[in-house]
Length: 196
Picture (tube, rainbow, N blue to C red):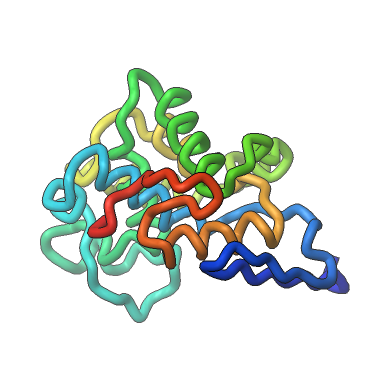
């Protein structure tokens, strides 16, 4: 709904200021890329993650395949473009793809101090059925050895992470978690080392 507008600010003292349609739910989409990157680094170490995805900006669209085909080595330029986020999703550890995604969802729930966070199934199914550009990126990366494993399983993690449903308070708490160097302010629990 283009007429809905909500805002939330969460400060380091624990105050939450919110106005408008701040309780309206929406899907995380690319906001999810920051947290999946953290989990991949915790699972594999910085060196391994950045051997598969770079740290450089790109002047191309977020879903472009151009640089994958024209640079050497053929790895995504950074974790915040779609190719990079798919490569990062492939690095999350777990015995199967459901376990891998559930570990990521559990991390989001802890960060937001909200155990009710879920995937919006309608958005997830839409992304899965229309994500042909992302599928092309993933299969290209599989072909050149950037990602290992089942491409559809890896894409499933990516489509689901983008489809996690949040509100403005949840997103503000993600920002607060980053500002608080990996510690959930409400619980005092350190989930991620400051360096990560």
